[in-house]
Amino acid sequence: MDFTEKQIGFFDKLKEYYLKIEKIITPRSKSCGSCIECCYHLINYLHSPLEIDYANYYLIKSGNPDNLPVLSWQDHIEQSAGLCIYCDMDKKICRLYKARFNLCRIYGPFITDTDLTCFPSCVYKWSAVQHGTSSSKLIPYNEEYESLVMDYLELVSEDVKRIYLDITDNAFGTVARKRLLFAVEHYKKLIAASPDNGYLYGCLGRAYRNLGNSEEAIKYFHKSIEIDSNQEMAYLDIGTYYYKQKLTDKAEEYFRKALKIEPSDSQARYSLIMCLLKQKRFEEASSEFCRLTDESFQYEERLLRERDLIDLI
Image (cartoon, rainbow, N blue to C red; front, side, top):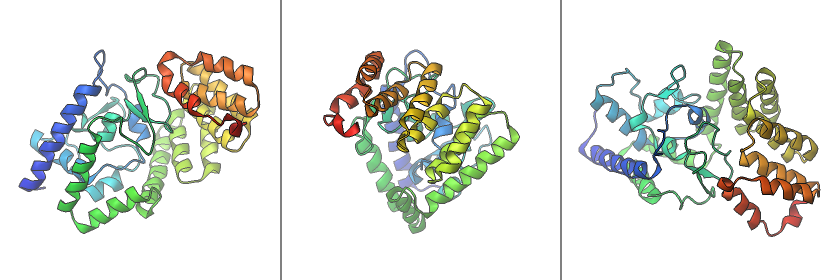
């Protein structure tokens, strides 16, 4: 795989961006990458042609000691639907860590207000910054990154450009749906190999949920906790499902179960508060609100911004 001087120029700029963002987000006490929690949850996200090409360039320049696949962007989006091809499940490491993609870097420290809170083992658990899905202004150098990604599209084929823009413009476009279907099959294969891994059932449920198949999703969420009663995220997923169905009694039950496993999960507590408000149990909601940890200020702010709470109850 050969790269032009213009492409290499973009790679140098992307590397500079990575170095700048790393200086800001790298934890002092422990390095990210010692777990693969994020790897499980980024299966439905798309990496840009620039980042894939840079990863290939990095592998070639480094001699590719782990013999990782060097794939075109189109092949990558086909083969990486499901668990990332650079993720080593056994060793729980990213084999592309130094050249990992932008989303892999910012997923932990910068979470959207629709994402789950950081995982219990995440090094960013108490320092994550929350931002709205329609705004990424809180992410440092984000405009610089997005500009690089878009400008690089002028160097790729028209097919790659068209497919990439189609996916980014339409989250459930043809190619995106194909990736989700691939993810479903991928997780089924992983489950066949490890049928006692409750976590994988939860991942399969989320893939079905993103496809809009809530019936299959809830089935696998329940299967997840049936196999492993400590799957906190599955309880949270089930609670969210029931909340959207306006079954607040059931939703409350599962949010409380999630909190029993992980009392500091501010997303679960926030969701519980919403359930209590819906049921007009104001004193209990107030009590739960007070139990939100200081580190979970983003959820407190979100609640305080809800000026028309009457609409929620």
